[in-house]
Length: 272
Image 1 (cartoon, rainbow, N blue to C red):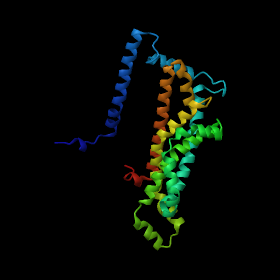
Image 2: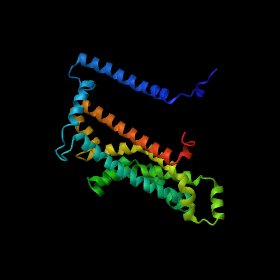
Image 3: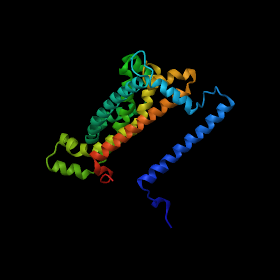
Image 4: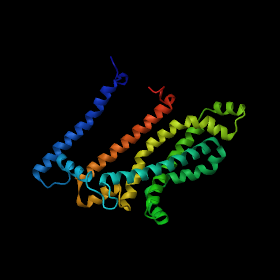
């Protein structure tokens, strides 16, 4: 008798079964939307697919007055710029601190508590402080993303490096390696797949911080557009924007996974 835990499916079957719940949800939404519009043709809570298609045509053809770009393009580029810079700063700082704290116990004693305290502070709570100190321009939005995810990544990378087999450190020191060489030659190569994994896990919170900052003070961006039209109950715009953000997040996650598997196949069972 075949156990459920022993069932292995091919790629095609996995894609098909994975798509079924999404198709089912869309079908349920279609039925619910049509039912609501039969009772109230002016209903805005569950817009029809036709209404959303019209909205999509509008914000993919109309231009934003402030940037003279197509609205969706302007919003996407602005948000991806803020997200990309924030993630880059967070990743670089987490990599440096993770190596430092993971390899050197003294650094862990001195800086570890500070990182732990910063990690438990709700990032959105410091958003007003960032606006006061850095202003309402790009710096405060980028800083919120970096501050929001860097401590988590730092703690994860520090724990990974600190728990590497002691035998590796002992052998490297026997061969004459100093602290710098232990970090670069021993810890860093093994840390890179973990860094990409930590970045993948941080993408969700990073999007949350981005949307939050754009909702408070911005004149362009995906979060700005969603909160701009919410006062008009424009669900026909909000839902496609949420779907677009989801597609961007999925694409970013797939890209990071591809880079990890290509660059470090040994961390994925030989790339299989």
